[in-house]
Structures are given as C-alpha cells and as structure tokens.
Image 1 (cartoon, rainbow, N blue to C red):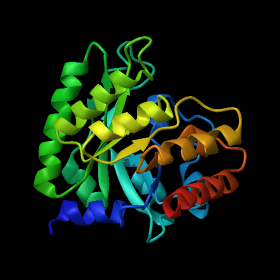
Image 2: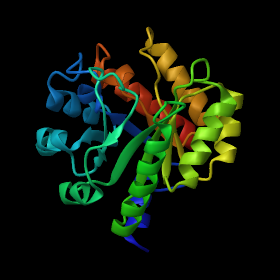
Image 3: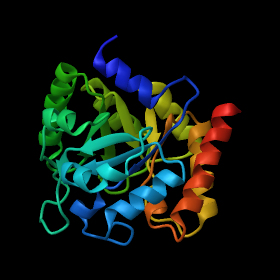
Image 4: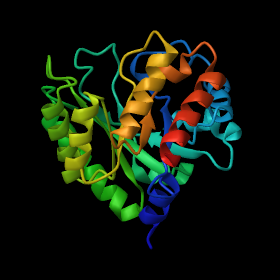
Length: 252
C-alpha cells in the first residue's frame, strides 16, 4: 500500500463512511468575509461540531495549525484567483504538492471552471497536479464547477465535467447538486468518490440539512460545504446537525 492509498483510507475509512469537509479558501478569492475574518476561531468551532477535514490555502495552515485536532484531516488548496481580477474565473496554481507535503497535508485540491474561456489552461494545470500527486503519494481533490451560463447545475454538463476531472487524474471530485436523480447518474458515471458542495448561501438551516441528506442518499461520499457552515449564526450547532445527518445516512 502506497502513501496515496493510505491517505485515501483516512479520508474514507470504510465504504459507508461519509467525509465531512469544509473549505476555508474564500478569503483569498473574495476577501475576509464574515466567518473568515479570524480563521482560527472558525476552525475550532467547526472541529467542535464534528468536521473531519479543513481545506485552506498554504498560508492558512500556519494560522490553524495549533488548533488542529489529531483526528482532523488537512487539505491544502493550490488554486488561486481573486474577485479583483478581470479574469477571476481563471484559476492559477499558486503552490506545489511538495509544499503541501511539508505542511502535513492529507490531500491537495485544485479548481477547474469548465466553460470558462481559460478552461484549457486549467485542465492542463489539473493534469500536471495529478502527476505531482502521484509522484508524492498525495490524493488530489478537484473542485469541479461548470461556469457556462445556464448550465451551472445542468446534469449532463456536471456529469461531463466530473468525468473529465477524473479522467485527468483527480482522486476525489467536488461538484454542485443538480437533483437527486441527476446526482445519482453523475455518481454512476464518475469512477472516483464525489463530494457535494453547498452552492449559494442558503437562508434556512433546514434546506442545508435536506441538501446533505438528498446528496448522500444519491451517492455522495460526503460534503465539502463552506459558507453555509462557516457563516452560520451558530457554527458548532449547525455543524453538529450536519455531522448527525451524515452519520445517519452512513448507518442507514
């Protein structure tokens, strides 16, 4: 068993295990928004609520390192762009897998915006990152989005994007939720574990819990949801409810 297999087993310790991951990379892309003005308290609250994996940019690791519980998995996000740029959809690689290894990462992530004018360059980056990850035994998560207008949650477009990311070497996929039926078909055509993202900020906690329930029952191997958790009015309580929902599906 190699390093990547060992790390993937930590992410998914059993076939029924569901990963509870929260990305905290938004402060680079859109600024220090609510919930991320101070990263460490948010990280502590999420872990207290049962989150198993936190994903940050490499500079964020030094902020949360002291608060990481021994059981918490660490993801390092390598893609970067800001809302200040004209080509904000063009994600560029701003780190290396070797850096992530030195930081103690359990996985690295990159983002590809399918349908963006720079899609080709991002696919090229994904292929190179997959090669680096294979050489260093690191699982690769691809945050897979469709940015073609009107197709952001279209089943066929999402399924195509997820399969393309897997075909280029991603070990885990994160994507949007089209519908229960559509997501089930997407999972069937994607040969690696698929996580569901939270999408836009939801107004009601009940809608978040329903999304988690619907996605996992449709085959998601877990969630990778940001704003709907770290911008919750009570992060610990909301995270605990999500963790309970994931646990209930896994045992069901």
